Length: 119
Length: 119
Image 1 (cartoon, chains in turn yellow, blue):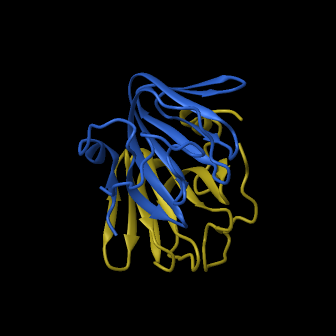
Image 2 (spheres, each protein chain N blue to C red):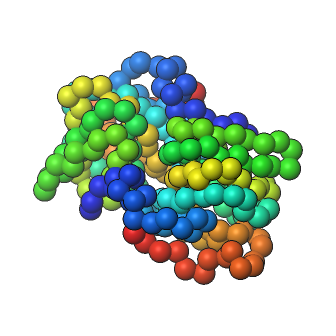
């Protein structure tokens, strides 16, 4: 039982698009990630996913609209909704999602993570 | 599907110890609360609970130790662990917990909320 300092955790890694697990509760993970550039269109059939911006700006592109998130804002992507995260500059985000989530959702390619590190 | 701006949501209420629902996903709620003073010792038999400090400082007293949370820090209280949140000055917190959580856990008194408002 230890507290988690977001700043300290973010200082532990630099790679983009590789979320790290920093907490677990009720079958969900709290993850931190640094994002830069464009990910891939994907969806999660059975999982809702929360993105909160801790530092920087993130655009979550949906098929119908773009959601621009600034520091201190979050957005919940409902299950089954295709999305594409895009960050012009590096952004630090916090994710809340079920333990079962695979980063690329229904897509599987070289960006798919088979293992998510705990820090 | 709307983004949530924490600052804007916190500006909508002033009362202490009355969490507001600002998001729902995977059977969990995201809540915001303003706390000041001392709550009551309680525990949640079946739910883990996350407290993240958005502004200010919060002490979570456990029977074995005190956890001091500053801005940008979170702590997960495992189910079954007695805790007592204390804030000398007003603190703004984000909570992440199952929809089933009752604020006073295994205790029921005048601080128990039978209804949690959505904002």
